Length: 249
Image 1 (cartoon, one colour):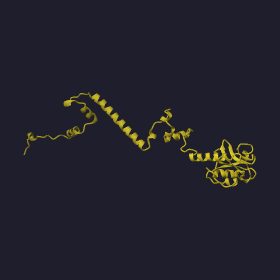
Image 2 (cartoon, one colour):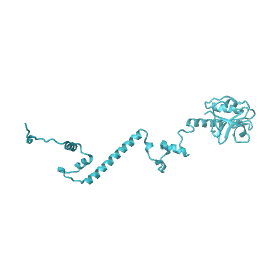
Image 3 (cartoon, helix red, strand yellow):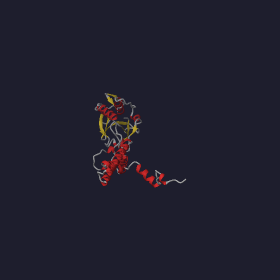
């Protein structure tokens, strides 16, 4: 039976036409959406395509900036922000070196630039103890020297040191020969207040001890002066007899 072509009411679209139709019915692009929003009633255009394109460019820039800010906040939260910040620290902006990134600190070390220490060389507790030691020792100034003595009527060098530290809750042995075996060794040039300094005087073993005060000075019970006094460790007598120092604080 023949089919009358006039009976076909819905023509079949070609694949190309179907593709075009599907594309047209999809969600409009950002540019097209912007054009539609810029159009007046009944699709009448109130903004030229060129102006709409410029508006879209601005919109894209704003989106990019928003993403950049979001990424920066994410970096800061994960501790990475300092590594992504430009080297503003070397531009005279007055930012403290304590906030420099890891790479900046490593560069400073290689170039010999001073880098702040992470820890102080002397804790506040140790500084307080040293001050107390110095104050206690100063009370003995003028006390007569007596070999083997350990009282106000006469005292020798090791007893003087032992009593000063005992008054500050630090126990030391009785003789200089024993005291040199306690504490930690102090390298030459690293002496600080409160260190014990030892000398070889009348015997081959450590036979004299004092308490370092700083600036090359020590307080000690001196047989030569006949009392507790302050002497210069760089004097012609003490310098060649110096054996070393120990730190007990």
